[in-house]
Amino acid sequence: MSSDRIQRHKLIDRAFHWVMAACLFALLITGLAPKLGVDFAWITIHWVSGLLLALIVIGHTIRALFWQSVKSMWFGAADIQALAATLRASDGPKPGKYSLAQRLMHHAVTVFCLAAIATGMVMLAKIDSPFWTRDPYLISAETWGLVYVVHGLAALTFVSLIVLHVYFALRPEKLFYLRGMIFGWISRDELAANHDPALWVGEK
Amino acid sequence: MDFFRFSRNAWGQTTLEGVSFDLFWAFLGAAVAFVVAHAVFAAIKARGKAKT
Image (cartoon, rainbow over the protein chains, first blue to last red):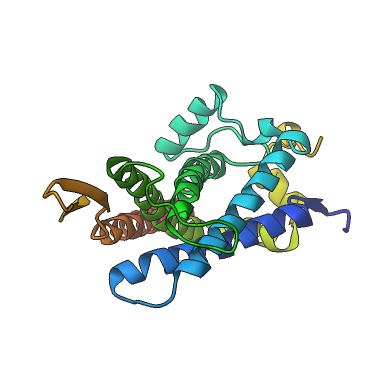
């Protein structure tokens, strides 16, 4: 990497991001299209994508806790000032590795992804697979209803989150983040203009 | 627009089935509305900055 470039995302983190994106698109298309009238054999694609998503999320969590800096994704008291500046549409203090919006998006994705995975794991009891036999009586009908409500709300929230994420990724002033997520780097000028290098916490 | 889906079981009791998928259009519409509002706001702000 040339000296005027800063590594923002390692290959393993970029791979996680794009595999997660592929899983989410597969899950949303196979989960929602049949409900909207487009019927096809969706169940196998859906649960296999869900299991793959769960596995890479576990991998990402381990990597984030032991190899990366949790602090770089933290939302603390100092961020209230940045949030107020954002709401006033003025320039607040420069962030570390991740902007306030990026951290809030990450936390929203974390909450709804974990909710979808946890309920999805329970829902696996309703299907037969080469690894287990279905048991639809695992929990009561009322509890199944709640499981489906949480799973459905998480899925619908992802529709909104993905629209917002893609919009901000494609905005002209944010395109360098997209390049960073594809090729891994941003320039020193982009770093200086958008981030505080002193607050940029890298790998452990 | 319904928020939830219900069904009746063999004993005639109402059972919660899940969230209503009519809400898909509400979630999609809310996100698109935010995108349009932000794009307009950002364009107005950029024009104001260019003038000053």
